[in-house]
Length: 355
Ligand code: CA
Image (tube, rainbow, N blue to C red; front, side):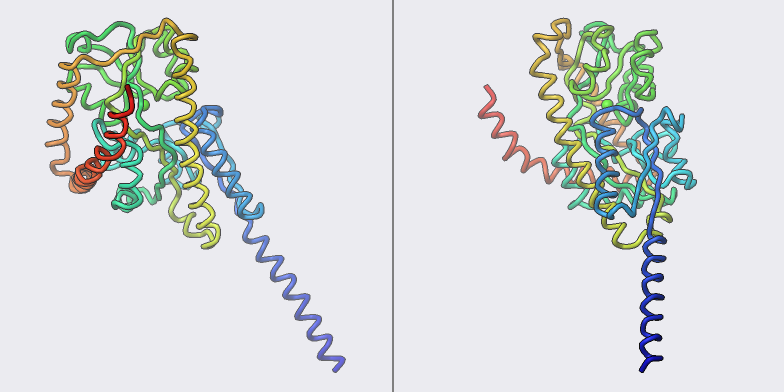
């Protein structure tokens, strides 16, 4: 009896150590690199919220350190850093990689494409998320929606755009497929890291730029140099992305994987809401606090030319690019279906109620 009791006690002690050891093994410390600087609300808020949720839901066992671009010095290098395992995660926008791999372009937004609710429906119910994983597969990276800006404004210009000729030769910062469209119309298109936008405009490196919407733009001060603020056509639903090193994700316990996925999804939704609120707030003050800002819409012939260039580019852009074609076809088919409902619901409602 005595011996059995001792044996039981020994086993109990060993089990305690085993549980403690396994808890220690489960302690996960990850690093995340952002394309953004340390304070770029609401983009950075989404990342901070995601990391805080992960830590809280894991009882402090899964901790993600966030490095902003001033720390890692490579705002457009974050995909490579995740691919190489230098970082476990990143927060960026998929269309920044169009020069690296054209298949990654369509997952942020497309000109004249889906609105945010339409695009979320495509991602989660229409096969978009699966296609995004397929496109990131060669990088050993998983990609998840990372927060939406909703419809973006068309950008800041020093002078009024009265015709297509006024656009020709302009040096403009504009990423994604919209950049391809404007290049076709004769603009010199470039992408510049968010932290360098204001100085680039101030120094004349660029003549015009687009960034996001009033909530984020006005704080940047672009209106002091380029007061013509145009309504949007080019980014109706800009979705940011969380990029995750696939091998490191697979090393997580199923519990931590579930925590990470839930935290990314919740933080993304909160960013969408926060950005909407920030823009509504900024817009409500625009006339009184920033009277020099001139709200403009591109003239109809300019819009028509953009639409025509967009359609022509889309028609032959995906030739010999089977995966890009698959993604663009999927988006076009989903837009065709979902837009009919949007027209019947939100569009009709607004048309009847906005006077
Ligand atoms: Ca933008």
